[in-house]
Image 1 (cartoon, rainbow, N blue to C red):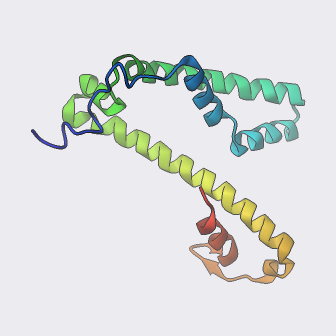
Image 2: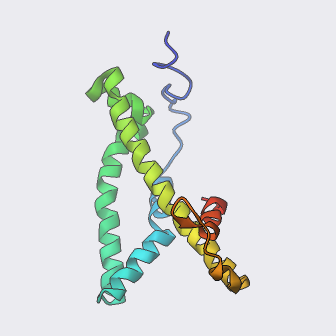
Image 3: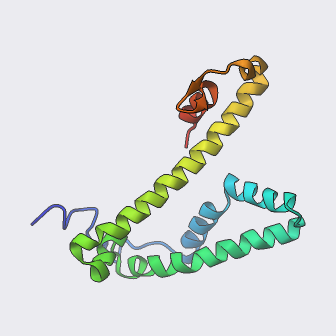
Length: 157
Protein backbone atom coordinates (compact mmCIF):
# COMPACT_ATOMS: atom_id res chain seq x y z
CA UNK A 1 0.00 0.00 0.00
CA UNK A 2 1.17 3.53 -0.81
CA UNK A 3 2.54 5.24 2.32
CA UNK A 4 1.06 8.57 1.13
CA UNK A 5 -2.44 7.09 1.32
CA UNK A 6 -2.24 5.26 4.63
CA UNK A 7 0.16 5.46 7.53
CA UNK A 8 0.07 5.51 11.32
CA UNK A 9 -0.82 9.22 11.43
CA UNK A 10 -3.76 8.80 9.05
CA UNK A 11 -5.16 5.63 10.63
CA UNK A 12 -8.43 5.93 12.57
CA UNK A 13 -8.17 5.77 16.34
CA UNK A 14 -10.00 3.10 18.30
CA UNK A 15 -12.90 3.72 20.68
CA UNK A 16 -10.52 3.18 23.58
CA UNK A 17 -8.22 5.93 22.29
CA UNK A 18 -11.08 8.45 21.97
CA UNK A 19 -11.00 9.77 25.51
CA UNK A 20 -11.69 13.49 25.10
CA UNK A 21 -14.68 14.94 26.89
CA UNK A 22 -16.61 18.16 26.37
CA UNK A 23 -14.25 19.72 28.91
CA UNK A 24 -11.23 18.90 26.71
CA UNK A 25 -12.84 20.49 23.66
CA UNK A 26 -13.89 23.54 25.70
CA UNK A 27 -10.41 24.06 27.12
CA UNK A 28 -8.89 23.68 23.64
CA UNK A 29 -11.23 26.41 22.37
CA UNK A 30 -10.43 28.68 25.32
CA UNK A 31 -6.72 28.09 24.77
CA UNK A 32 -7.06 29.13 21.13
CA UNK A 33 -9.23 32.13 22.00
CA UNK A 34 -7.47 33.65 25.00
CA UNK A 35 -4.18 34.92 23.60
CA UNK A 36 -2.20 38.13 23.42
CA UNK A 37 -3.52 38.98 19.89
CA UNK A 38 -7.04 38.74 21.32
CA UNK A 39 -6.12 41.21 24.06
CA UNK A 40 -4.54 43.46 21.44
CA UNK A 41 -7.70 43.36 19.34
CA UNK A 42 -9.86 44.18 22.34
CA UNK A 43 -7.61 47.09 23.29
CA UNK A 44 -7.73 48.43 19.74
CA UNK A 45 -11.54 48.28 19.85
CA UNK A 46 -11.46 50.28 23.09
CA UNK A 47 -9.03 52.74 21.53
CA UNK A 48 -11.44 53.01 18.58
CA UNK A 49 -14.27 54.18 20.85
CA UNK A 50 -15.92 51.09 22.35
CA UNK A 51 -16.20 50.68 26.08
CA UNK A 52 -14.62 47.60 27.66
CA UNK A 53 -17.91 45.72 27.79
CA UNK A 54 -18.61 46.28 24.08
CA UNK A 55 -15.06 45.22 23.16
CA UNK A 56 -15.32 42.08 25.30
CA UNK A 57 -18.72 41.26 23.77
CA UNK A 58 -17.38 41.76 20.24
CA UNK A 59 -14.40 39.49 20.87
CA UNK A 60 -16.64 36.88 22.49
CA UNK A 61 -19.12 36.99 19.59
CA UNK A 62 -16.28 36.64 17.07
CA UNK A 63 -14.94 33.61 18.92
CA UNK A 64 -18.42 32.03 19.04
CA UNK A 65 -18.83 32.61 15.28
CA UNK A 66 -15.48 30.91 14.65
CA UNK A 67 -16.39 28.10 17.06
CA UNK A 68 -19.33 26.94 14.89
CA UNK A 69 -17.29 25.96 11.80
CA UNK A 70 -14.57 24.54 14.06
CA UNK A 71 -17.11 22.22 15.67
CA UNK A 72 -18.58 21.25 12.31
CA UNK A 73 -15.09 20.69 10.92
CA UNK A 74 -13.95 18.56 13.84
CA UNK A 75 -17.13 16.59 14.49
CA UNK A 76 -16.30 13.79 12.07
CA UNK A 77 -12.85 13.34 13.58
CA UNK A 78 -14.23 13.25 17.11
CA UNK A 79 -17.05 10.86 16.19
CA UNK A 80 -15.25 8.46 13.85
CA UNK A 81 -11.65 8.94 14.95
CA UNK A 82 -10.32 9.99 11.56
CA UNK A 83 -8.00 12.94 10.96
CA UNK A 84 -9.04 15.92 8.85
CA UNK A 85 -7.01 14.94 5.74
CA UNK A 86 -8.80 11.59 5.61
CA UNK A 87 -12.18 13.29 6.09
CA UNK A 88 -11.57 15.64 3.15
CA UNK A 89 -10.91 12.70 0.84
CA UNK A 90 -14.68 12.06 0.78
CA UNK A 91 -15.32 15.50 -0.70
CA UNK A 92 -12.17 16.24 -2.68
CA UNK A 93 -10.79 12.81 -3.57
CA UNK A 94 -7.41 11.48 -2.60
CA UNK A 95 -5.37 13.96 -4.64
CA UNK A 96 -7.78 16.86 -4.22
CA UNK A 97 -7.74 16.54 -0.44
CA UNK A 98 -4.31 18.16 -0.56
CA UNK A 99 -5.97 21.49 -1.41
CA UNK A 100 -7.79 22.01 1.92
CA UNK A 101 -4.76 20.61 3.75
CA UNK A 102 -2.52 23.18 2.04
CA UNK A 103 -5.01 25.97 2.74
CA UNK A 104 -5.01 25.00 6.43
CA UNK A 105 -1.21 24.98 6.37
CA UNK A 106 -1.16 28.44 4.78
CA UNK A 107 -3.44 29.85 7.48
CA UNK A 108 -1.32 28.15 10.16
CA UNK A 109 1.87 29.68 8.73
CA UNK A 110 0.26 33.12 8.69
CA UNK A 111 -0.96 32.77 12.27
CA UNK A 112 2.46 31.49 13.37
CA UNK A 113 4.02 34.57 11.76
CA UNK A 114 1.62 36.90 13.58
CA UNK A 115 2.28 35.20 16.91
CA UNK A 116 6.03 35.27 16.35
CA UNK A 117 6.00 38.93 15.32
CA UNK A 118 4.07 39.83 18.48
CA UNK A 119 6.53 37.79 20.57
CA UNK A 120 9.47 39.49 18.85
CA UNK A 121 7.93 42.90 19.49
CA UNK A 122 7.60 42.03 23.18
CA UNK A 123 11.26 40.95 23.31
CA UNK A 124 12.27 44.16 21.48
CA UNK A 125 10.37 46.23 24.04
CA UNK A 126 12.26 44.46 26.83
CA UNK A 127 15.58 45.01 25.03
CA UNK A 128 14.83 48.74 24.79
CA UNK A 129 14.02 48.87 28.50
CA UNK A 130 17.27 47.13 29.40
CA UNK A 131 19.40 48.78 26.72
CA UNK A 132 17.90 52.14 25.62
CA UNK A 133 20.86 52.87 23.33
CA UNK A 134 19.69 50.06 21.05
CA UNK A 135 17.13 52.45 19.58
CA UNK A 136 19.98 54.44 17.97
CA UNK A 137 21.22 51.39 16.02
CA UNK A 138 19.79 51.83 12.53
CA UNK A 139 21.12 48.85 10.57
CA UNK A 140 18.53 46.96 8.51
CA UNK A 141 18.03 43.36 7.48
CA UNK A 142 15.30 42.43 4.99
CA UNK A 143 13.68 45.85 5.42
CA UNK A 144 13.51 45.60 9.20
CA UNK A 145 15.90 46.94 11.81
CA UNK A 146 18.57 44.42 12.78
CA UNK A 147 17.63 44.43 16.46
CA UNK A 148 13.86 43.99 15.87
CA UNK A 149 14.70 41.25 13.35
CA UNK A 150 16.94 39.48 15.88
CA UNK A 151 14.14 39.73 18.46
CA UNK A 152 11.72 38.23 15.93
CA UNK A 153 14.12 35.34 15.32
CA UNK A 154 14.57 34.87 19.08
CA UNK A 155 10.82 34.78 19.72
CA UNK A 156 9.81 31.46 21.28
CA UNK A 157 6.67 31.16 19.15
